[in-house]
Length: 313
Image 1 (cartoon, helix red, strand yellow):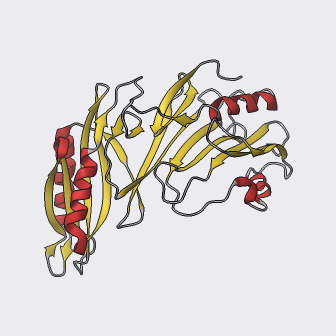
Image 2 (cartoon, rainbow, N blue to C red):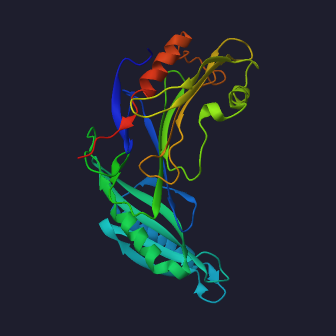
Image 3 (cartoon, one colour):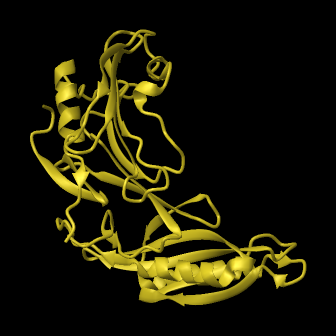
């Protein structure tokens, strides 16, 4: 196996093992029920004072944007828990049907200071409740110590924990990592609410052929696996494809695992995992990640088979 040592990390309500010493990238968005669109949660270095300056900059920007009946598009600024700030402004410059909120939420965790930024649209008819939901969302942020797997209920996300997130918000959390030594190799895990009914991988006609085509390279793929791959009590299916680059020099891999989840369920989200390698970047001298298909599958199994619910209580 390529990685001799693995560490356990927490994502949302789940645990998963990742290779030791690899830089992990976290991606998160929250869908609020009234706007019905995903909004990414952004993080930038910064102190509580920086959060205030960002908010002040947004206020100035909105005040300089004219509104047909309100003078400018700026409405108000509201304090949030933990020294955060919410800035509200009209969504467009010609009516007052909708506004938008910009949240700046400072968090000090693991000896570092960050500002989390979130944006949401607001329906003027439901403004009071939606502003309260956004305030409650801001209060859900908790620092998370390095190397600690929390036992409390909530959602892990990198160096923070979301506790008591309002029901109005639905999470979509993911992580991925790229091997710095075998460039081009990426593994990822994602947990997101299933808003519709999803099909299992084996129920998608022509899907394997389409995934092979998207890999590029030679037009023929080897289907290493296609079918059931349960992980403990979690049912799952996988498709593991392998092919070659056009010049035949490199073996390519496209592995996918999925549990489609239950519609509108926070406790049974859609789970997906992937391993992707299409050869090294052009002109790169990076080594290939796997010497055989068996080694690629062993690494894949080590990753996918580590997915499990985080114990709570």
